[in-house]
Length: 220
Image (cartoon, rainbow, N blue to C red; front, side, top):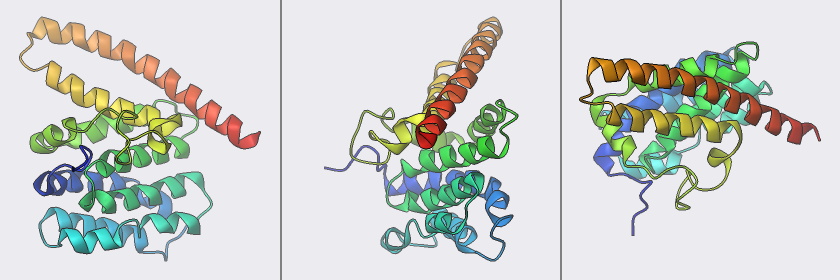
């Protein structure tokens, strides 16, 4: 039986374009450290070609994660995260859930590049959500909540814990929120904005706490 994290081929092509947008936005963080390594940029280009229907599923599955392999060629944590974003984007042909993983890696790259600005990751996630087309948004809403389904990258592990887990939950909360706010009155929207502001403050605290926990574990 197909994993709920797979999505249909048509849906994967929709969310691949968004994943490429997210990964490309942080590509300069990688290229600043490895200007002659074209693997992440090539992976993003292939992801866009897949989204346009120019590449087949089988071909891209064989080549997935090539861009992410460039993460081993750099040392800066932001550069590593940016390379991983490209690798996750190129894996969308195999499984749609990789689109959320690509976005999470990209947002994490922004966070790591701006340690003095804890709000940077929030703003990046907000940009990513705004970048979604309506059909891609609907496709991503079909994915199971992170950590609940083991048959894909959103299962228990890297993308369900630590800073990346927090970011994926932010993305999925944003997807649910945009669905629930349809049809509300302007007064209701104003109340929602206040609640969103409170949630953003809580989320920033969660991101900082998760980052401290991960960094503390690495240094221990």
